Length: 262
Image (cartoon, rainbow, N blue to C red):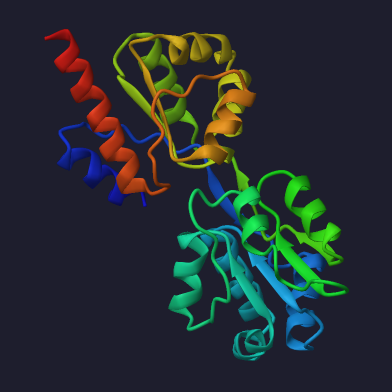
């Protein structure tokens, strides 16, 4: 994904500055993940809600680690599969797993609940892939429909092994050498602030991101909500939640700025 984004930025005249703040850690050996795989294989689960592509891959890899991948994939035929957005849907299609429902943009929990308004979930066993912190809105909405809900954490976003590129980015932001910072997921926000805080540079980071000369771009409303919760601004958010649309929106933002100045 990093190389894909770099290519998009270059095609629109920008210079990529990679500074990864995340590391995927699959939890395929955890008891709750093992239980979820077993329940799918034993036909005890009625509905699966997958929120991210990473989580979907982690679940399939968990089944493979238990030597039950084919059984797991076949058993999903009996499960109602809900993909929150194109990212989990893409992974599902790669494994020929059916998708019963995918809500429309902007792929938020509110939109997902609205999309399943007429779905009968009374006394149904529903598993929701946990994403970041607890999704109380989604869980409560499913429970209000009579579902027996469990939230399962399939992976976590750990800090990168090497934080030097991130700290260098923080210094370059402070020096005025970076024009825009792009956030493509909400965990990036917490991790970036955590890395900066550990190095004693959170204050400098916040000051840099607050400046008018630095554009903060967010992939969509979920990520934007997290940024604002942390007291950070959002200058650019594309109309449609997609990486390509984000880069286009950022390029248009700079173009409009040049026209206004000119």
